[in-house]
Length: 510
Image (cartoon, rainbow, N blue to C red; front, side, top):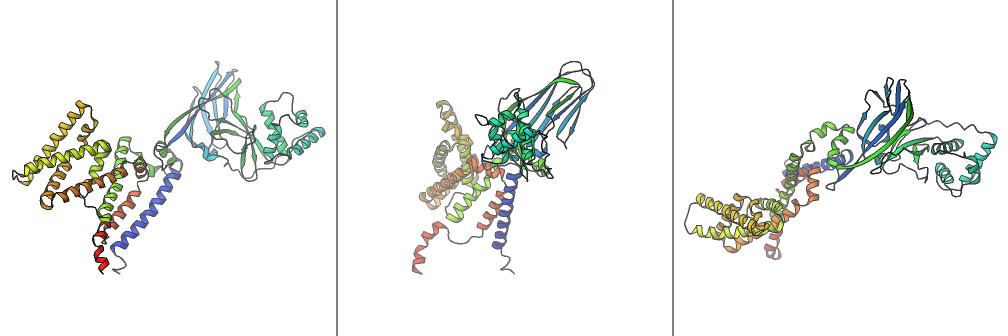
């Protein structure tokens, strides 16, 4: 049993379970919260303003307007209606908003604002079961014969039947039979209705769809018409100009079917105009709303992403430190590089992030060099340990003060970076290096300082990387994997890489 439940096996199992949990959590955050491995990813948020205007007739007013519903699959951030004096009802079943009021005297203006994001996810996914086969249009004998000729001419074109008919309608010059079949003065709505009637002859359910193209800066535009046909499994949208299937990019459908986009009772000359405004926001800001839509709101509320930005920025740095610690552990326990203290390189790397790489490196080298010189002078005085280290700390503060003043006067950013180094750690490094110098010689002390700097530089390039910082913050479960990896490395008792060369003569002899 002891061999079965060894520390290494338990830690290996914990590492395996943490990897499974992390993979699931990463998938979950990407799928339901919209997280991404790329830093500073933004999401487009579209604000659509619908302006309804009409002249009242003196009778009670009822305004019915089609609005997007959850079936459209894109995400609604919020919606708002400005209609003073109206009672507002929203019917989610048929996707309409109804506004009612008593008789009005002045010209009426009603505003409906919709804010949406991620609308492209619903492209071509609107399913509806139990679609009935449409009735054939009531045509005279001559009209039906012409309709059959039009359908026969459409067979020559590629694509599904809706695409064939749309291509025929947009052919230049127009087919003579089709030209004679169409009214002399034809609106776009009549044009789509004739397409629907021709598809009904082929027993293909079809209907009109009205929506808005999300184009930045769009002002006072009418809704765009699309043809929607059922292919036996789901409804597909078709562009009535190109015949291209599928929901166009950045297109929001407001109304499906034969009902009008806007109905006004108690008013005349009703119009609806759309304006579109685009804004960009961080994906993190929309994560909470995505979680609410997917019924995971409570889980998000207790995550670090629900905290204020100040706390989030602080935690963003803390989340990357375990990875820097892993680098130090690998350098010491696997590669076998001796450093001055266990996590001194980590602290130096943190300081380099604040100062900048080259300014910090130069400042640190100058402070250590001057500090070692002053420590050598103090050693001649035979002071006790605590007063000696205290004196070194004071010297370090004075050095930093001098370098900061000099840098400010000479306009050198390098010198002013000195204030970011942790004073106590710097003083301790100077003390430790001087003791090593006295006990083991200058070569060992110099080697420890150089190896500490190499480890600090390696750690710096890890924790300063924007992609790594973003990933460790967005997917902080990775720190569980790092935790058990570090603990598992703690059970390693084999040779370090630097020791392989050291003990290679013994291996050859054996």
